[in-house]
Image (cartoon, rainbow, N blue to C red):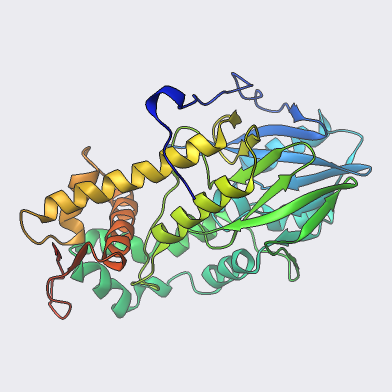
Length: 351
């Protein structure tokens, strides 16, 4: 269970590495674990890649997106700091393009087995087979009923096509990783954990003997991972799942763990950061409750309550879906309710 510390005993996050490794280089962050960074053409302009010593080679954790600069970065790493040792297997934490995008190419290029969760594998396959699924009328109607403009609804409906441009086809087989498994890498036992909210069944690894936690995107030092409701699961509670995952992580992993995240810098202070992330989302819920006290609001009308800067249609689609996650969480807790669930335009009200 997460409990807030008093102001006097709240520790600060500690960053043992002040800078990331320069492009094309690696940095040892724990015995037998290397860190490299690969650029992304987005506002979040990088993804962290980890290489874990695995016998006579390196097991790879995550990949970067599928584009030529990422392929070039991998070729340069293997001709440079990783020269002389093979890649042994590929572990993918979740199905977002910056983590799984080059998995198919890496597996084929280097003959690697793919290890990931079933949800990750099937989620990627599903989008690849049906990239236009969200164009169906029931899905677009869902977004419009909650106040999304036609322009943004159409953008959300075609996101699968953008996904395909960033992801290579996966290999036809994979090894399933499940929470509770122990994955042996280089003779060391890595405990498999999984979390939800940001991505279903996102894989995380914990090396207990070194107190090292490879947390993917679940716990980041300076930003909050996106937690969104999507039209295929309109009444889902991804925020509730995310908060539950944070509590489980904080309860499972001892103080003093080195956190190796999917983005930004490695850090110490996992329990504190879990508290901060939970508090951030509860503050957003309070903002929504305050706004609805003045009258019922649609999800779209609540977006500027949370996001104060102008948003382009792409940013708006994610902001809308994240606000919806807070709305569904609050409905589940009995804090707000739909004013008229059968209305053409749905709005929530305080109770």
